[in-house]
Length: 240
Image 1 (cartoon, rainbow, N blue to C red):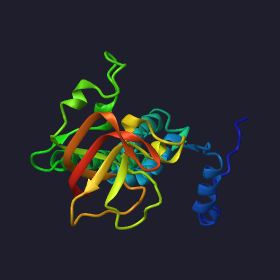
Image 2 (cartoon, helix red, strand yellow):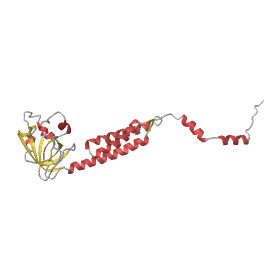
Image 3 (tube, one colour):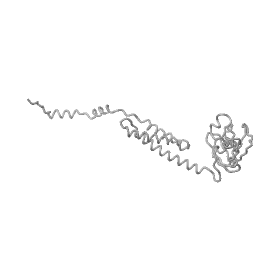
Image 4 (cartoon, rainbow, N blue to C red):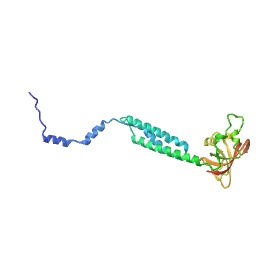
């Protein structure tokens, strides 16, 4: 005895087709789609791209877009490798592109500034060149610094806070804000007494100064009001 089949009538089939709701099916499908976590490295890369804008104003902050680029590539690779676990592909790409542009742009900008900031005829030095020599620690001033006596140099530093605010002609230059604001008097080799030639003047601020002029070096301390004294003096005709 064979099983009896009942072909579905056309009116019933039409009714079933009319009752089909694609939206309901989509919602049901989405309900079963596994949750994908937003990649933290992709987010971090995007945030560092925003913070990395500050690298255009300060060379040490180039580390921000460099780190952001690494995190962006890391996040993008993780999203490609585990597409069912992580989302944030767009953030990762934005972080990669943004940080790469900032890294290239800020590096080129600061390289150009470094090459062109020294006035003609001046020798670039830093406070590291003025520190006592490891080979002759008993000497207050290293021989290399003594060789700079009478030469035109270019140096960068901060104005030591001695109470002056505006129209400053004579001041002490120190290598960093920590030197000038914490721990009392700076080291003797961390100070340069600067005298600006007319009509140059400056103001006190937390901005690094760029100066050029003739450096005077003396192994005997020169008395300075409020301080023990200085070994270095700069007769400056350039200040920025």
